[in-house]
Image 1: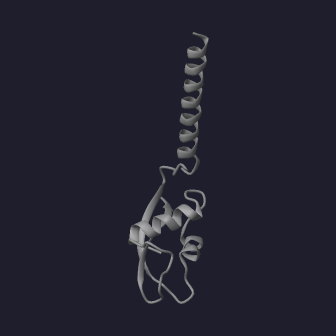
Image 2 (image 1 turned 90 degrees about the vertical axis):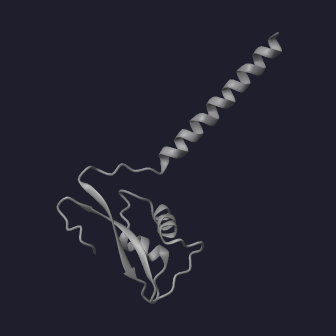
Image 3 (image 1 turned 60 degrees about the vertical axis):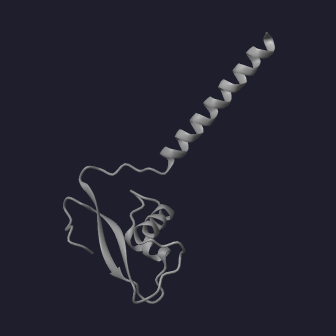
Length: 106
């Protein structure tokens, strides 16, 4: 009987630990965007020397999204499977503006 109780306690403990880890992992990368801040999109021409990481430095805002998440977002939006981009091509990027800023593009 004691073996069964230990087994069930162990199973419940493992389930709790896994559940907590999943919740912490899910919430860790999410940042709250205030109501007066809007996420906008624009299309830009890729210049010589641009990389996805340089675009992330230029257009992302670390208050709302991490650099690596921004690069993942750019790749998803533009259907990119790799990190390679070419000058002369166009790419859609996101950026954040507050109520006080112009939302017509960058």
